Length: 179
Image (cartoon, rainbow, N blue to C red; front, side, top):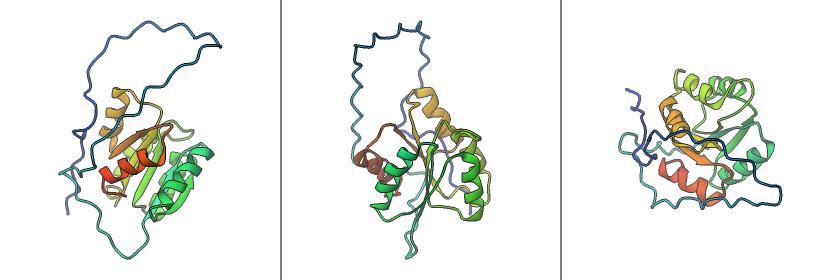
């Protein structure tokens, strides 16, 4: 069986080179920055190049890879609510070892971690026997277009920008057929 082709999904933002602006001066401590609103996505549809995972009677497994205990706790609560059995690790090297022992169905992956970054991990994962099977969602604060495209090119299926909430993550999981 041929592994599915990977690439940059149609819903990914267009990569447009932008001039590099001069660094902005640091805001005064009394100033408060407003965050931009989170994007609203249309109802989830599956990419045509990858069929949804086959549902079986066995429990679906999720591996959460993040060096932040709080992010792991929030992520665990969300994916357990939709029936996943969850394991957690703090870096890409530990995650690779877990995947070699038992490949999960879903991986929620931080970008910036000690020992092995998320980008290095997903590239190594996709080279393993069975490494094409897990759905990989980058959970990252790297929201710029260039980094999003690097994640997709390395083999990620989706991304979600931190901080995220349950509806946002669940919408992303639905988009890739993992909810």
